[in-house]
Length: 240
Image 1 (cartoon, rainbow, N blue to C red):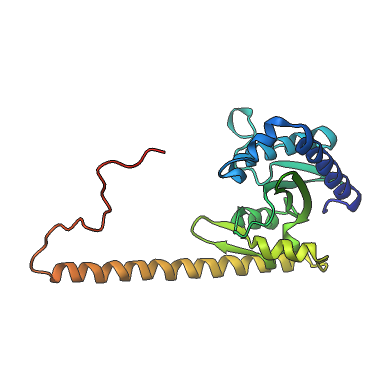
Image 2 (cartoon, helix red, strand yellow):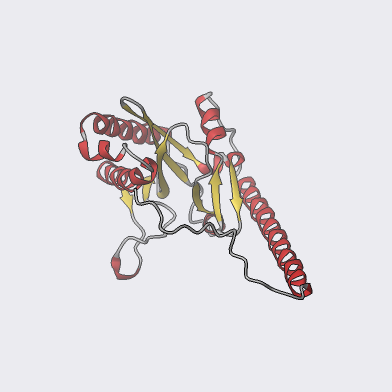
């Protein structure tokens, strides 16, 4: 049972209110928004703070691993109750206007959980920040399974990734997903898995062929002389 509309609205509202206040008054957070690699430095702080907010205002659970500590690789940063079940929520933070493909979750892990009837949704809680003279937060809560057309999959690391720019442009344009049966979502995930697996095999075959040809060329040379001209050596690197 997906999170009900009213609860989704409360999650979005409380998250936005908290981060609006922090962008105005929290010096620790504001310091993270300055300098290089701001998105990476903000990520852990935003994830932990947002998870703590959800824990304080909603009925939540955390998956425990060995030693009774929260499982590091749980599908959700937190599991939030709606109706009779707990739904995984993955908090994703970053800088507004990014045009990358951030990792979302293991496709196989989500697919296994769906097939075992452990979940029927997978929520992403985006907390994005516009960084200028002032810092402004944006909050968006979506069920990933309703937006699979904006994802891609790499079978190497096994991660689903978001086509970030296209996704947010579409959402800001007022896009509303159509209701889709859970079995259709499972079929789509399985097609992504098969396609990613096929591409991985092809890439590895090309890698083998490339090395095979290079080794053949190497063995065909009568004389081998070490040539380090392309290594870009300097006496000592500059220390900035």
